[in-house]
Image 1: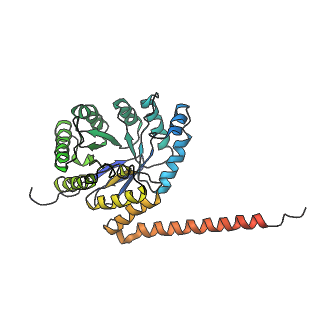
Image 2 (image 1 turned 90 degrees about the horizontal axis):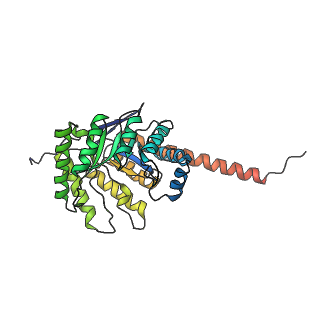
Image 3 (image 1 turned 90 degrees about the vertical axis):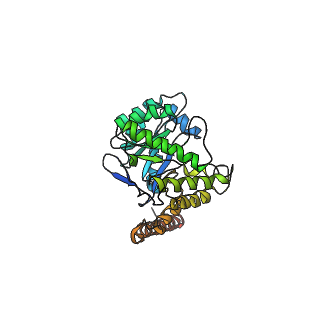
Length: 314
């Protein structure tokens, strides 16, 4: 290596009417994770009964929380995932103009989602396993999508940063040389692991991020809540982790946009890293929060006054 850092690459995704450019030199991209039935038994039961009302509520909450992209996963047992994913993607595109990350381990579901999506999607995900590359990369190319890639293979999830970087190198080589996918359309997930299981894993992931930024300049994402799994104070850990990871080149994360403390940590890091010109986004958010608080206080005061008022004479 020459010692020079690679220039940041830019990954462009779109909905039918909105374009989003992801880059480590741009404001952090929040990918809302809530449209996922994993660990949500009531949501799963509703879906099995044909009730998709929770989808609308989750979309609204994530948009209001500040999501830039919505991740949609419909992996519900005993349900036709391909049909359901296509249906929900169409539904969500009728509710918001945010771009979508189509998330499934089922190749048929990915294709069903891509076939109905209006825009340029982010596909979640591939690994360095030969079979997974062969199954998913042709779809990524066919539908002109971008793709999230994880540096693990059939043998292991490597703990050492250098092993992960070797697998990133393989993914880049296969995707670009064998399938003609542009390197800027590959977003690497450097594998954020639970800190409660192994304290060294956080350092290893940060080292992986720095290596990816220096060698290729590629965009990166991660499942933000993975880091704090099994620990108390999860929001505080997630916020601190994301701010640290942003200094190592992380440019997006799949996270819960409904958690103001974590979203605020990310936006503060944007400001401190020079990705929020003149702090205008930070100031706007603060003013909006102030206005919302005043409106809530006024409504509470009016409600209290109405409750104590004398009933009108008849």
